[in-house]
Length: 567
Image (cartoon, rainbow, N blue to C red; front, side, top):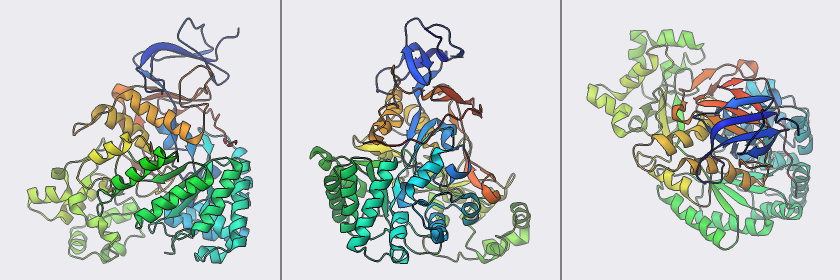
């Protein structure tokens, strides 16, 4: 028998089943786990994992790397945080299928919905595809630092079939519906892992138009559901405002029944209806008890906006004097902002903008992010509380925090999942039996948030560091990030450390895991900026038996490939 290609010795195995950790050596041959425990011969490569955890690689079910996969082989920051499999094409947005004269329309939509700048997309996208199978082939021709799964996005599909009628949200004709169903089936048979759609007012194109799928009629969605039933492939991913809560959840129940496929929906707590999520979760539990498969995708921390002078938003962006310098390079803006007279002028002005834009003045819900970041801050650390103690206005406190030091200070504004000023509700959500931990949005919102690190946060905060309430067992956290998401996607070859499984593995210095402070880098096409965040404590991330990251540094190995779903 030949020697294993890689042996991980002396580690504590947390195998993804939810069972107790145990100490054992683990052998890998040709990308597959071939032995755990017993006497294992020396491998061609060895990792000493003494005092370390050995876990499955994480599976991220909600990313927006649709563009990033076309211009780079690295899916950071997700892959810096232990993710070895990503699912893209969420929320109904994507770039295929697409006619040549619709490129600008889809770029405009992605810019608005997912906050990826137009110039980045225009320069970066190669558009070497037309149909959705073409898009998969384009991805399939490349190598990555993670495996990639994709979904058929409803908005692109609708515009492809209906043109401007689809973009203008006109009702689909019977012919339109059948064509969308045919193309959905084509995408699923080519390897897509599902179909995604959006029904939320929050999703708008950069020009202000609503997403084309906002009020798509049930007949349109049912035709697509029937195509999914015929192929027997994938799930239906949906995001909704749930303004008509009963109507929406009953629609999703019917779609699950008509498609004979799973349905997964985004679930968040809003300030306006802090207990609304409980009603929805109850509906989901009832549907599952009846034999339907509906899951809620939840975040393990608040949906938040990060504010800073180098970021896309800051508390002063709506004030006329700031608007006049907003176009300047960061260094020039900072120099102006540090001038006392300039500071006084901005602080004396009122914010001009929409009610939604004015949320950047929620001083009672705004906090210095800190280093390491604190995503569950107490009320007494808010900007408003600091101001009261100092006898100053909140505007002055926020301004001085932002221009201090190197001018790269970050303020943290929780938007959802924080109505009570703590994460007790999030603890209930992530513990719910029919929920999946996701919604990290890796690849999107590149100038205002970086929630792709929610994988690391789930482990550090919820199994080790939280001091304000519930802690969960470590083995539970690993199961939620790996096996549960893999099973939900139908990926039976990963998510567990067992003989015969794919060797996607993290070696963790768990005791010293720590999320670093987010930072801006300018590494997108056209010099575009994005927020990134790393986490200390990942000794190694292994994909298909190859070490792709060692102590946070890329090794050069790129064994990641496009995954194609099968019936």
